[in-house]
Amino acid sequence: MIELTGWEPLGISVDWAAIEGELGVPLPADYKELYEVFGGGVFSDSVYFLGRDEGVSFDFLRQWRVSLSVDQDSKFGDVSAVDPYAVYAPGGQGLVEWGSTEWADEYCWLIDAERPGEYPVLARAHDVGGWHRYDMSTSEFLYRVLADADFQPFGIAQYDLGTTFTPGSGDDG
Image (cartoon, rainbow, N blue to C red; front, top):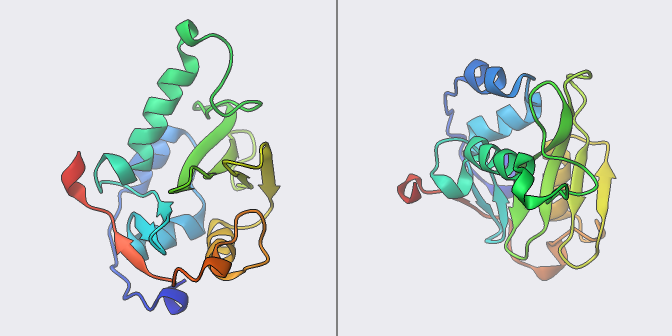
């Protein structure tokens, strides 16, 4: 990803133990490496990579907390926003979003507290319907979205948007 974007690693320091303690599971190692290099922000002016402390728009932990509270609120009924899955709750199984696109595609991990270390990527395109499962790392999935024009329905390389990265701003939250 560094080579693809020409980005200079930031070397961000994160208290992963506190974040993982709240979630009750370790996060994927390659995600943590990506975040320490890039921080949260936007790839190719269209793919949002969630991190920590870049304000509301790019803070995956804050967004997870909100999604979880909505998902568990009985006044909304039994239908989950990530149906047929649920938003991950500590000790359980469900989705945690780590990325999205400007056209409402969603990128999540399927986390199972009983199987720490396994993080398949589940992605849903805004116009294609159901969830697609990818047994690959976060960084491989993100690379394929940005660089592989044949990675359908998620690849954006055919749109010639460039492979840039713009850091998220901490000013919005």
